[in-house]
Image (cartoon, rainbow, N blue to C red; front, side):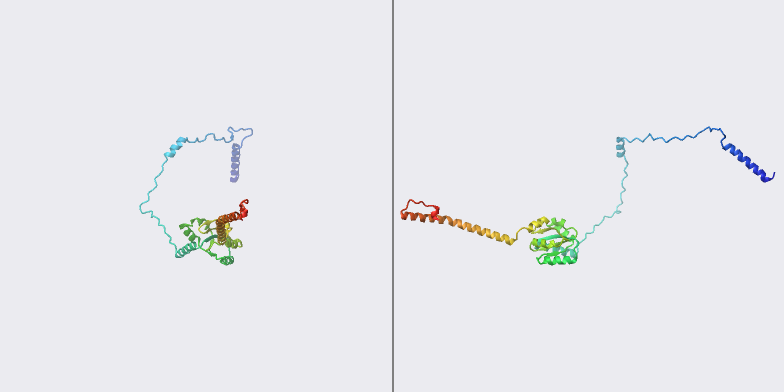
Amino acid sequence: MTGPTVTRHIRIKMAATLCGRLLPKAGWVPITQSIRHGSKAVTRHRRPMHIIKQKLMAVTEYIPPTPVAPPGALTPRVRKIEEESGLAILLRKDLETLFKECKMIAVVQNNASNAEDMQLLKHRLKKHTINVKFFPNQVMRSFLNDGIYRNMLPLVIGQTVIFVSKEPKVKEMLQVLRGNPQMVLLGACIENTLLSYQGILNYSKLPSMTTIHGELVSGLTMMTSQTVSILHRHPAHLSALLQQYVKQQGSGDTTDTVSDKDAA
């Protein structure tokens, strides 16, 4: 046999030997068998800690001390005091003058009113001697917070303007605002009295001062005239009775009685 043939026979014998050892023979039963069991539920759980032990652990818990900062490490914060600008001071003075001179100061909220509508509103209000003033909310709040008009602070919200007049022209102001739905009346200070929107409506229904003066004068005149007539009534009545009595005595007619009808 040649060399390659011998090598081939050796390989065949080795393969037969391995197959005989590894492959199971017919009717051969293995000694050990692998059986797969299902997973068991965990029956042991960690028991909770007793409440007394929990309290004891909480009380005895170690709390490390906070490290103390070395001196000079933390510099105190210096708050800068913002001084009012010259314009803010000037606007506050104008506000103070308006509140002293004007009897009607109304706060109106401006809801996206354009320049043309605002100019027309100013012209209509100017006919009734009502002026429209614009002031920043910061200036308004600083002025109202320091004075006696601090109750008007809730009215100064968002874009607001004020209507001022030296006389309370409430009816005229409401008539002009009816044609401008963008301007919403929030409240007003009329003759040092803070009024809501409903209070302004009730105030507008009151008669004017001229009408009240006329009614007062007519009432006083009527009372004086009634007083004079009452004072002159008794002496005239008494003198008429006396005259009738004298006439009856002179004529000798004693049968007739003196009555109020005869005296009249």
